[in-house]
Length: 511
Image 1 (cartoon, rainbow, N blue to C red):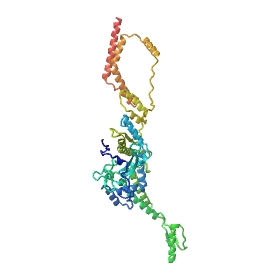
Image 2 (cartoon, helix red, strand yellow; image 1 turned 135 degrees about the horizontal axis):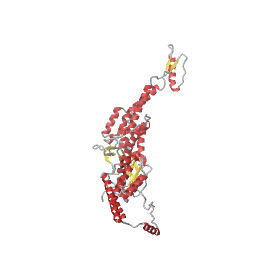
Image 3 (tube, rainbow, N blue to C red; image 1 turned 45 degrees about the vertical axis):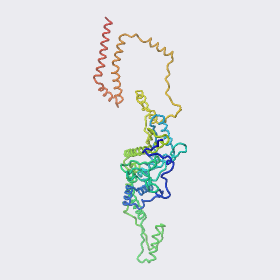
Image 4 (cartoon, one colour; image 1 turned 30 degrees about the vertical axis):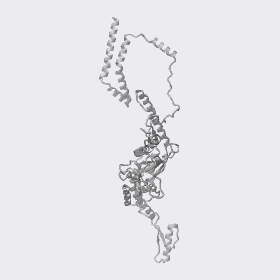
């Protein structure tokens, strides 16, 4: 019996599919505990951990990426928006062909994707947008005598490494620390192509890390400034003859003001509250710097700033930025669909039906607005001319599911033939009203036969000109030049010969 192979040619071991391969361990390399490289982060340290990620140890970089989502609210907001927007797009399943087996396979995939947790599962897969890659383990269930993905479990990206040779093949860090191949049909591995190059260098976290580092410095300085200058400076003055006890009393009063906002001092002492004047520019500098890095983050993650930052430009700028964001959405959706088709659809069909020549296709994206009336008119004209169109394609375009076997189907009404008596009456009336044929009728038939191809071609050209013209004037101008001289000359010659033959026939009848 031939062994089942995965999409990469690796043999499938059914016993492995039912157990977890990348589960966390209490002790060992797959621990849920994490470091915190953002504490005391400096440009030198950031450069070092980014270089370590390129050299094969991405642990610190991935931990920093996680902390950035926790600490930087702006980055968390725009990254979450990008992931949720794609995860909530419409998902459709297209059958490979109209064959019964392919339609059944498509229905199986639709049932698989009809799960309440699907959007959350997709968001876990889209974690790769921030970190460069994601690995979601499929937990297969066979209790219903059918292979079924019972769970899609997000796995910590720190538990995986890229192959040191090609830098693209993802490996699992085993309990002994050695790199192990991922079990076939066990993982959804998503590596979005956000930029060309190694996947570990393609995540948004790497691009945003520098903005995060410098923005953190700006916020720290801002907080220190607010701590020093946010409260007015308390300045106590004592007279030259004040005793040490008087000085200590004044000092206690000044200190108490910061806690209680109230104090008493002798009449001979004074306390002043000088304003922190001249510091407005410094405050604006901190705010402008943080806003600048937020805008750069928006541009990097969403491709625009119009939907996240208040900028000048009005409606036109917003529309332009929405189009840029739409391009990113389409690219994310297309890449996500390719991953789902490779790592979910094909394994699911292979395990239950065996290898197929063609597989159902998952499509993720905004539904295209189909003009049903226009499509129906086009089909009504083109199908009778021989155009071959798959019924499943038409149903998918207009949003109708494939009919179930045995379902009651709508059918066009059959044309009712006229009653026999009425048919005979019409035939007799037509025969009675038809005049006797003579030589002129034969001549007219000959003219119609000779002129029919020419007239049909002329009518078709006129129809095409009228359909393509935007205005009546344009149609008139194009009709004046549309017919070559040979066509009209040939038609004129046929009519001239017919008229000559008619004159000769009339002369013969008179004589």
